[in-house]
Image 1 (tube, rainbow, N blue to C red):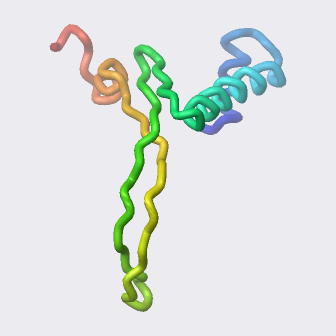
Image 2 (cartoon, rainbow, N blue to C red):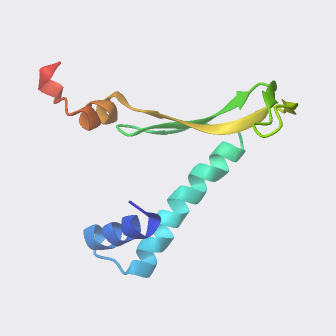
Length: 97
């Protein structure tokens, strides 16, 4: 599903215009990004949580030349799905536990 498809679905479910739905979806996504940039964790109950992780520096290799290359440390976004989401995707109903 793309951002545009998500906005279309929001517009249909909330009975708002497509432009308003684009604004809603964009605001939610921008808020998640802004929180991650500030080092905050974003938790959406029943869906999952977003946070950042720091990858340590390492030595890599250039695949073309085989030369060793220093790869610096970097911060990456990380998503951890909730138990409910994992089970829903796996096809496990809550009564099967």
